[in-house]
Length: 210
Image (cartoon, rainbow, N blue to C red):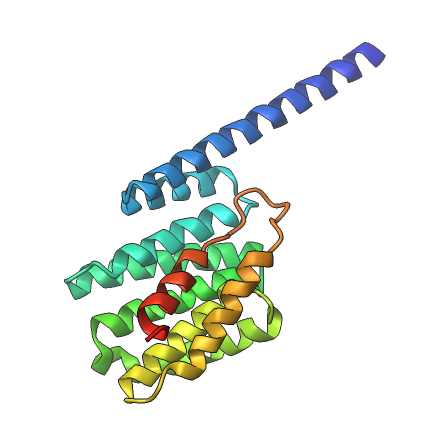
């Protein structure tokens, strides 16, 4: 009986290790596709991983986030809506697994921004207010998260430019985000979001250093 128990535990551990290896291999492949600018292919792979890892918020988060990024290149409104509806579904799945997660909130706000970027007159009034609420809540939840500070600052910059106002007050926020990126501790969670440092540097170089 003892031998059987040991065998069952050994098989379980072996299966768990194999599943973890398969997960990490799939995620690395998806990130490789993303690095090669094959964003749609990366999103599809993240989604397939999400179906296998039904209790992990990261695969549906990345599947939705990359789909949102691809939406900024779309020129047809019907295609845009299909992409962003699917992205919203995936991000809602991620939210159900990790409620009140600022990283997921930022991806949802970026989806709204994709709509506004496509047609500001049609989507701007309604979705701008939603984004303001998302960023405010994210700041309340994670005031020292550099991605939250950067995303809100970039959103505020876009609004300031639209209304012909100075963006300089928000350059300080971008600089703060960059400083926090420098000291951000690496998460113990494998594949936890870590983007933003290069974007902060780009904004400071192109928009803030005159």
